[in-house]
Length: 284
Image (tube, rainbow, N blue to C red; front, side):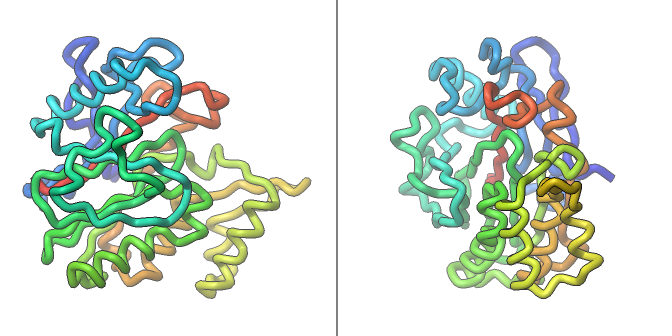
């Protein structure tokens, strides 16, 4: 069953259409977690219409209005939403009330050079931006810690999932066996062709975690001529398992951002001229 489901149907042209992690919303009413679509905002083409990225040459006032509308639909104060400037690394920030709301209206005030964050504070909603890369969500219901990470191919081979889980463990005493994880909408193996440079880095990861041949074949397929199809979602799932999270505690989407440009922005499918969705998670 698809874990990401529509949270609010669009009732007019201005209301954002959002996806939430349905099982989590039912089991853990103390959190909010999900993924935006491209529908229900005020941005004009080619950012039509719920663009949440301030770095894509959209009108900043439209982006901020879109972000405000998302907060309204979720019933959360806009001041709670906290953003980072992502650099395809594996730097994870610990967010306190001192950082609450950073980056929500400008890039300059965002957490700099950060691709993931964790928090134990209620009233903070962590937000990361996506248009094909893989959103990784984490929640420890025992210690009540949430985490969010941005995993493109670079962040994935740097094992940003392990970095996030380790920081939750060392900072807040989380046990991997207690943590829930979710892998959100992103480009699927059906659409993600990579070259030898990327494939060679992925093979290094296979060696590092001693992945079996069968497991490797589920992640990367040689198409010939130094081209490969890469299942970035499955690679992240295996890395999350390697970090100690139970397979039964991992939710994985079937939604491909490149296949579904009616619903999502896709940097690759739309040749780089497009908007950004956000993944969000927070303790309400």
